[in-house]
Image (cartoon, rainbow, N blue to C red; front, side, top):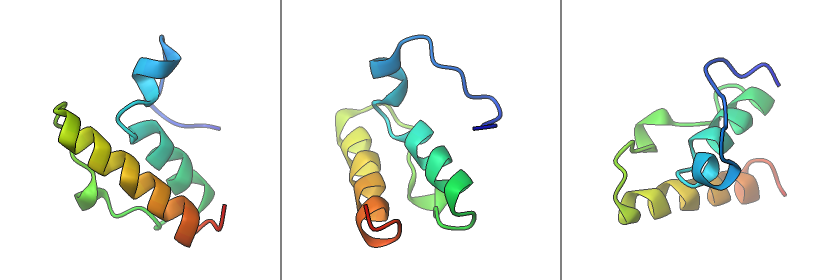
Length: 64
């Protein structure tokens, strides 16, 4: 998909924080992702918040 600096060694570990999903959404619809809502902290609560944001974007913006 032409995502710069994105390489996954382990699929589950690479996708668990939502960053790759957000990059894909941004690639499909530029300007959609509010990167201020993404948190790079590795604590479980922040990972869940990131994934919930991905789900919200998929439901409300991408309509999938």
